[in-house]
Image 1 (cartoon, helix red, strand yellow):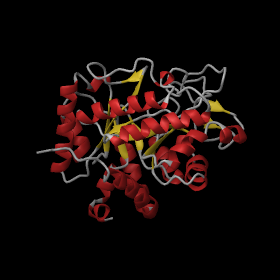
Image 2: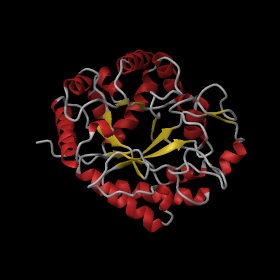
Image 3: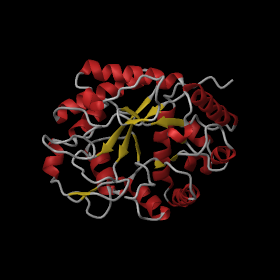
Length: 334
């Protein structure tokens, strides 16, 4: 890939960082993140959002600055699931009850079409949605207000419809949270949950929606921070070679972009050098860090050292990212 060959090592490493930042405009720190760390993407939260027109201006400034630095376009992401997780508010269309109310293909299509069109209009090119987690019948967990209704097969069908509808309007879809957190009662923002669900149960339930999304060509997949003891009793899915490399990539055949959930969550207690090593070993492409800290620099430095030691593994990850970026509808940065 010629685009890959043209990037310096620092630029290649930066493509593997998707980060949050402070501010509602192109601040000096955001310029630094682009100019020095060569970040490959940003994610916006309420702290970055004032209005659609302000977000549109911010996205334009970000992409224009990337172009001036001869960098690939950035992923500009947001969590817009509807319901309890929707960073953009009115005047954008709100879906107040979220995925649980999207029980038909028509409703799922309407959500994806509307959300994709509105996000693309203001400069987003990535939505951290849909949620493909399955909540068992009669179970009450932390995801009950964020999951599609129905059987695992129905969850997968509804999620794929959202995924396709988002992408039809130029917004990349990130399905989550592999291999499924619908059975979880603890919050990985606050602790590291463990699930001892047998593999046979995971295969006939939790994994099915992700299998369907893979078959339909999902662009990217987000990993959970849950420890699945039946597969790996030491490391959460986001850092597990057994779950990412062995299960997701080798067994399930997924060769697209894989990213972590937010590495700022309390579930992640290891230092960033250890995290970088585990991500390399697991074949995870992108590290997501949602709050500004020196972890950005530490992780970039660790990735760079590992890229020198394992150039083929690093090159494969960067090529997957750049291949996905080639599908982004380039904004007018003039």
